[in-house]
Length: 198
Image 1 (tube, rainbow, N blue to C red):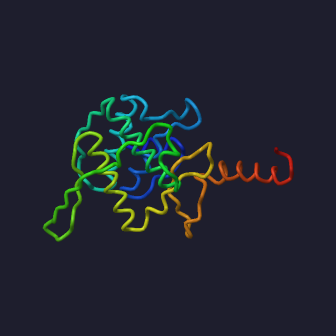
Image 2 (cartoon, one colour; image 1 turned 90 degrees about the vertical axis):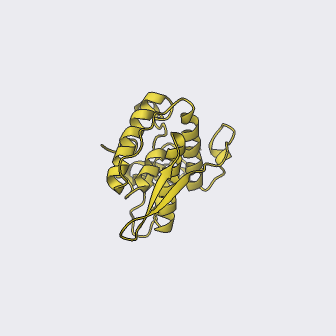
Image 3 (cartoon, rainbow, N blue to C red; image 1 turned 180 degrees about the vertical axis):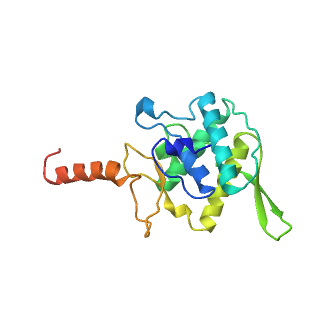
């Protein structure tokens, strides 16, 4: 299985469990019908979720995730969580990023367990979208503790807005692909400076 939302943009996934967060962020629709919003309808959302959770469990050793059957009610919750995360990564107010009225703050539950070898294991709790939210928030918390959260970014190109993991040494990346998004923006800026664009 693979992280289909991220790989459809030709990108490498973030390391470990943070890749699941990147996956949710990359379910957005970009570039018309070739890259549709994967959370718009139940069937593609379910296919995406099944593949993403299987890959996440494999990458993290979390064990088999519960079977989650998404419903129409789950999709707006997942889109709202995605929008809130994207707004946070863009350092903007979530109400600026989404035309719909903001919902309640996303919350989740995590169960901590002490293993026989003295490690703490974290297990998401809840059902449906609530379990998904719990697992995502747990991965974000872990990334913040490991100082990898700051490397998950949204491409600065407004036409793109793909989430990418910045692997640069000094964490200075702003484009998911410098050759595609960076060159286009820099070329427009250069033409504007020379007075070729209004």
